[in-house]
Image (cartoon, rainbow, N blue to C red):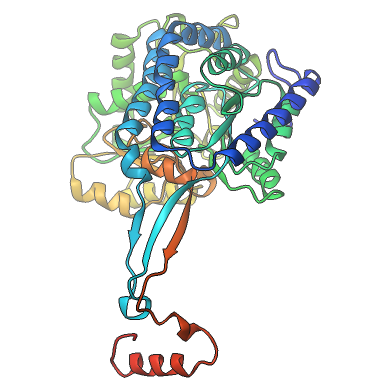
Amino acid sequence: MSILQEPAQALASGDDAAAIADLKAAFEVQRRAFAADRRPSLDVRRERVGRIAPMMLANRERISAALAQDFGSHPTGAADLIETLAVVGRVQYVLENLEAWTAPQDRPMDAGLFGTAHAYIEMQPKGVVGNMIPWNFPFDIGVGPMVEMLAAGNRVILKPSEYVPGCAALLREMVAEHFSPDLVYVAVGGLDLARAFTELPFDHLLYTGSPGVGRQVMAAAARNLTPVTLELGGKCPAIVLPGAIDAETVKTIVGTKIVKNGQMCVSVDYALVPRGDMDRFADLAQAFMAEAAPDYAAGPDCTGIITARHLDRQEELLQEVRDHQSRIVTLGPDAPADRATRRMPMRLVLDPDPELRIMKEEIFGPILPVVPYDDLQGALDLINGGERPLGLYVFGHDQATVEHVLASTTSGGVSVNACALQGALPSLGFGGVGMSGMGRHHGIEGFREFSNPRGVVVRGEGDQVDAFFAPYAKAEAIVQHVLTGGAAG
């Protein structure tokens, strides 16, 4: 959704004048604070990062309640595991590795030319870093990257989505209780605030959301030459290789799809299966849901679609499928969506027309196209004919064929015989490629993303540095010596 579109549930752009003024003031406060302390020590960084885990754990129940409020329905277990404990795990991993990450990284030098000089990379803080947080994971993608931002020595400003006002208010309260605004600040407001946020001269900006808004964010950042990290999602395929259709494979694909009721950037957007296995896939999916969540859309494990407008879009996608007389399989009771909680059933669409919107747009809801293929190359051509996805999921038992799929495709990340795990590991850099994004966060890749790798040379003795200066007779002699087989110097 665009930051230029309609206001969301509780935050309208007309209320943003004061929030924008506060944001700009906080930005200036953080810039001055960073200028006064450009290289926080390892102990200081550890202490700052260390505040995050107790902050998350102390607010675990409130986080779950805020998610339920904003989504209409949200499973407590998912809130605890993904929005709270995942962040705590990220903290623990960073604290275990931060000393090694911050250590200078030596680089080799030609002793004949540079003598006893010493060269190294210093991972330097960038300064004030912004994070524009998506509505689907307001704490995991809000606080999670903040772990690496603070570990890198930066100061941080967070902008929660206007679609989750309860979560935004809670995040602001949590952060204010544990961090001074000159270190971490949460800017809460609507669309005008979002626009103002992108126009600030941040030293780095992270945005998670749609490619359309990503373009706007990047264009606004370009006016300040602000580097950006964009995580933009896309149509992530799961390709099931011949012989791999079984209960575990289908459970993994469908189980991943119902996380947040499909409202996840690394969710399975469509499944490619051998044509002869399409009905078996549907039967196994029905069996899985009948056992795991027999009344899914009316139960506590179903997350509500974020707004009525988003729910309407899901219904429009399904109506187009019906109009084209494509086969729909409802996993569980075929009941209409509950408008009060915005919960709706999980549905498969078998052998959809490639011109349908569900095959052209990121679905972001509980609809899973099951696309049959006749040969593996045809399936690979379908994947490669679209934009490069954020995630690619390969299910198969023949390692050579799996490796062939990996070698023949490009994606931000991959999970083999699993889905979405590439986005869940604190140790594994996560991000997209092409239309699905650029840059990485999580782990050492995230630390490096939010750091300036400054090259440092300390001159020693016994060098030939003066060969770079006029007159160049000495330089000519060195070049001739090298070209005739000698070493420089």
